[in-house]
Image (cartoon, rainbow, N blue to C red):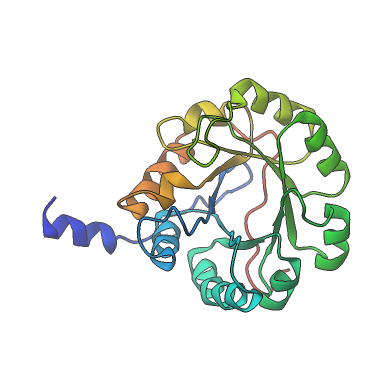
Length: 242
């Protein structure tokens, strides 16, 4: 590709967002420092330019201070892009950094406890089956993430739960369901056909040579879907509206 084309992609304006968002599918970027092709901040910034709705900072190692500083760095960037910022697991840092919410996994505090601490902030919970999904929804989760839907490098050797498993979760709980695992622009339309609220991606953007281009391709594919979420996930709230 020519230098001119490289520059035009890098400086392209953010993809316009629909004025009416009641039935809009959401895109979550889940960060993974180890799989990022470039420096992690650069990948996150590229994904925001490409149109993701949420960035979930997932730092399995490192200090609370390091995560706090990262959150404070990217919160203005997310706001500027009209996106939300979540922290994986760390409720204490989420409160200190004043981000939009947390995403809980196995070993995290229960969603009911998290809700008491976080108030109206968003609380997501990772689930891997129907009973887990029901328990999370009943315990106060604002949304659940279910997967992995397709084979993925982040879950080597584990069989995917598939589209039918995702559809069962979507039809069985009364909260938004975000699909994760092996999802990219080539298969996202099939995923959205289940009525889920959107998708979360890791490698599709983190491992891309050109993460902004991949984020834009995913955004286009998601926005071109003729399906609708069974339970839409609300748009990120902007600072001062919580």
